[in-house]
Length: 273
Image (cartoon, rainbow, N blue to C red):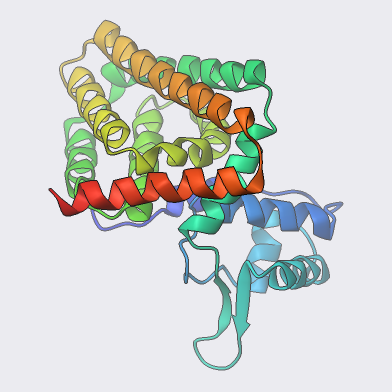
């Protein structure tokens, strides 16, 4: 279980799974890029050491070093020498959003809907089992993390919310289901983060998780499944609608303008709260 003050260790572990000895630098580069844009590592945060990445990903040190070099060339990380040195993430919120928007635009609508359905079915099954197997103290810890996340800045909020979602799935106590949930979560999380500039969508996500937690606490599997499925379906509909808006005018200027206007509205709304 996460402690109340824990960071996104579960998300980091989920995105840094073993590639295997045959892994190539391009695969490691892709894995680390996905990890960064999924929010497992925040802007300015240090990546694991080269030796630790080698162990986690199951590849050689040479492969890790080549991948890190490629990320430095792209400007996604910077490497500092000496005491307290290492490789640090340089991808801010704007870069992450732009990268994810391009992924969303390149994803066929039917594939996006299918990904949402896959996530929905796995999450709903985990929630149903959690109603039977979750301990009260586990629910209390998750509830406190969720409460603390309410007023967090967007990037931190998303990491906390992702941790909560993964912790809720782990309450199923099913290794296979939790593993499948983690896999689809790492794919879906960057897309879900596109909602975060929409204050209404963030509020609804938070409220949905509170309702899910309450349903599990009282042991109502039917209500837990209903809440989970409704929340994910709403997020999937939002993403499909946003994708349609993007592909209607895929010009670079329109994408930048659309992201900028959404972020400005978000900042204005937060200032008025």
